[in-house]
Image (tube, rainbow, N blue to C red):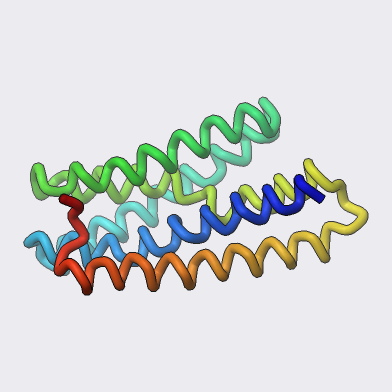
Length: 160
């Protein structure tokens, strides 16, 4: 049971950060002066890049196993979150940030099925994975609200 609750917490935390960060990146970029069309174009380019970045994670998982692929995906998502601080440096950076996010955001869609299978096998996969989707969705709801509330209360997405 401790593995179940730890996995639930990790998946909640991923839900708390991935979808809200991706959803709020356009609002953030526009709030600091980017044109909506430029941000939309950057997100579109990143979406096209995802046809390459998404299979990379699956290939790493297949070739090197869960531990190595976890290092990769958590590093990429951390870099994606940190990359938001680069947006302000130049108009070109919005493209770089969106592409970096594409590498890391795979954690939100592909990781949990791998982890459930690796930790619990396939016998109760349907029930456990369904539970994890609930934790993920709760994280998405809470994270979306939290990031939006912070921006509303402070008037900015920037800290400090």
